Amino acid sequence: MSELYDVTIIGGGTTGLYTAFYSGMRDLKTKVIEYQPELGGKVSFFYPEKKLYDVGGFPGVLGEDLVVNVKEQALSVQPTIVTGEKITDFEKQEDGTIVLTASTGEQHYTRTVIVASGLGTYDMRPLDVEGSHFYEGNHIHYTIQNLMQYTGQKAAVISENRVGLDWALALENVAAEVHLINRGAEFKAVYENDLEKLKQSGVHVHMEAKVEKLEGTESELEGVILDNGKQIQTNHLLVYEGLQIDKSLYDQWGLVTDKGRLPVGTDMATSMEGVFVAGDAAVYPSKTMLIASGFNEAMTAVNSAKSFIDPKAKSQVYSTVIYKHGNNE
Image 1 (cartoon, helix red, strand yellow):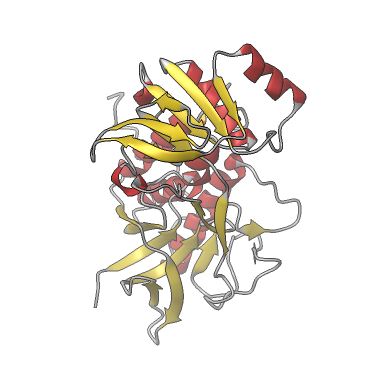
Image 2: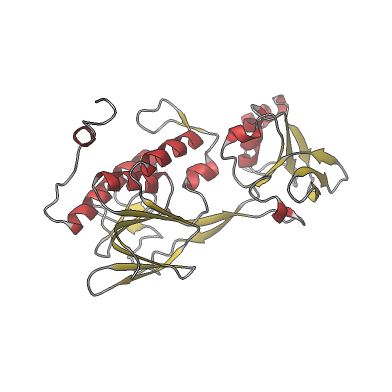
């Protein structure tokens, strides 16, 4: 049998990472399983260049900075991290152990589970241009994560959505040159002030244009050619042309759902014994869909998992007690 964990967290976004940290505080052997190849979840995908104002202790924090901090916090308690795996099946054994099976066939054994995987999994629509596979990851990106990597570089954004427009404006602050390529005649889901900001910026906008060819060596992107014949020099190509969304598999896992989410009480327990939830996947009266809410639910879910494993355990712990001999000693 594979190694047995006390807590396995499904989802490596900000809620899942904070869950891992608090699980470590409770001295629980912890594993995190994330579908994407990188940690960070929807904040990394959708808000890396945006300032977030609803997280306690931060008057305003960039999404990518929040992810970096939460990741560092989680890794400080040394959880096992698994990326690139999608859990497709739950199986409860006679001794109470839960076996999680991934689409890869890999199996994970755990005493409890905390679901922190939101409303499902998603992938960015890939760039459909010959040779794009040579540049995936290093020169073609599907998120603006790590904004400073574009410092002094030439960058182009392919998008007809507000997300792409926001990326282009953010890149203008660090990149030497920025192009925004829109295959349509207008931008979708934008406000008038967004268009005004774009107009006043130094971003080069190309409407009703499509990337037809990539130029460069097999390891270095040097530029793109549009279907109107125009050539653009660029080192980085950022692509946002919509999402491929797969709904959650909670029903398939054998959990009771309510419109795709997991109904819970104050203990964050789902319908399956030993399975708890935190973050957007949870639903209860007056639920708020905020990052801060996920952090609070994470602590409750971990405390419930601890009590499930050891009914005599304390209901909660205080960091001031745990770390009293820490950095301030």
